[in-house]
Structures are given as structure tokens and as C-alpha cells.
Image 1 (spheres, rainbow, N blue to C red):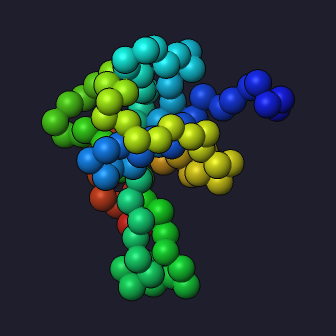
Image 2: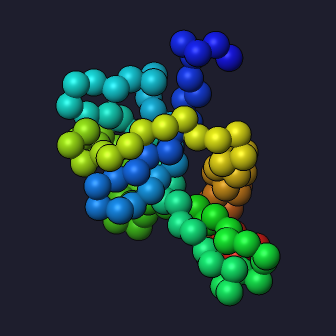
Length: 115
């Protein structure tokens, strides 16, 4: 990947404190808004909840169950930061999306608890 290229997978920090991982449609950021696809909310899970040695990352639907949409337009005034997602986060994001598709969104709690 050259410095000119970037991944379509993005980490977005919103002004309200939420963090999402998503794809940007056609890597297109307009003057005032951005269209995101399949946004998942990123949450840090402390080791006391996960039983692991360090904090873990959890991904869940960002707007579900309020909306069944897979794409949203965000106003750039509500965005604090947009960055390429790390390779590890991309791999986990793709895994979670695959699990959600395979399970038809029916039992999301078990996906995130590893059941």
C-alpha cells in the first residue's frame, strides 16, 4: 500500500464519545458529511469483565435495534477523528460481521460473549 492509498475500513471517534468501526462508501468524504456502511460500536471491556490479562475490544451494532439500516450519513461536525483501522481491528471487524450475517442477527449477545 502506498501512502496515497488507504483502507476502506475506518475507526471513527464521534464528539459524543462513541467510537465506531465501519467502511466508508467509495472512500468518499464530502465537505459536510460522510456515508458509513456497517458501522459497529467499539467498546473496551475491562479485564475484570472478560477474565483476560488485558482489556478486550467488543463490537456491537451501533444503531440496532433502532434502525435496520446498514448505511448512515454522518455530519462531519459530529466527527472528532477518522483514521484507518489497524490490521487487527479489521480482522476482528470482518469476523464479527460474518458471525452476525451467519446468525441472522438473532442472538448477538452470545456472539460477543464467545458462546
